[in-house]
Image (tube, rainbow, N blue to C red; front, side, top):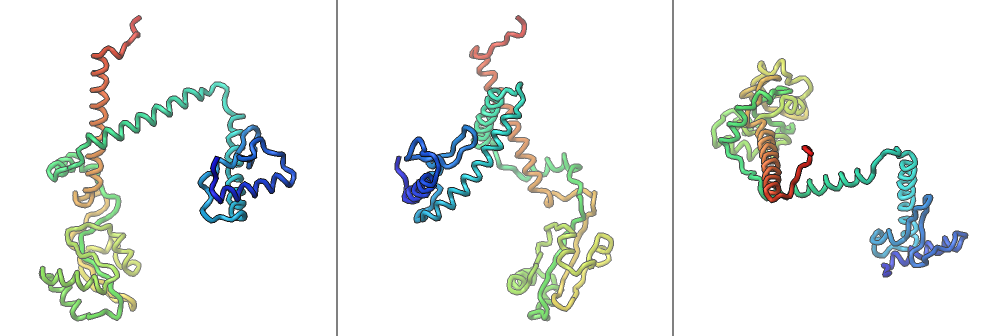
Length: 286
């Protein structure tokens, strides 16, 4: 057996321990590090755990920590075995677990090779329209513009003009300003955000589900920041979420249904193939 320098150093540590009263190990090239009832931890099981350049002292620390963890696991396993029900069929459990792992591995291969992950916008809309009742909102959402900039506000007059004009060219300039100076900037007027996400960026109580409609547009100063808010649309709790807000969720649902269909179809194809090959027999009527 070939050992790295660190393991060789570790053997010296173990040898020193043996020399201090421990019984001589059966295999001096692979000494016992710990024993729990009849289970033994040997040095060879720690191959690869010692970093290059580890000193004997480093190795001793690594060995002690690992042996402690190993002993705790081993004694818990021993205790578990003492309380294993007599009717527990371990062989069957192991068989079933192995079958589950093999089957899962094969199903992953099937999905990776047969699943069509491309979802057209038409299919997405059709799925959404058929299932949108399940997309009731749990919290209010808003479509808005929002900015938070530090105070004193850099180029405040320029920012005010850009915010108020609303021209396409000014929107691009506003985004450029935000990249330079804003701490928070939500400038996509087609995106939806949780109202609570916006409210958390403002002084407490500024925006709530109860007052948001009366505060559709404002700028506000609190001494450390200036805030700009413009509301375009709001959907309250229990309303149906717009497709753009739940698009990722809908896409995952479509892919999950496709995956289930691929697996069920493949299982049935395999069953029919092997049935026709006479590799499946039933004896229930005998």
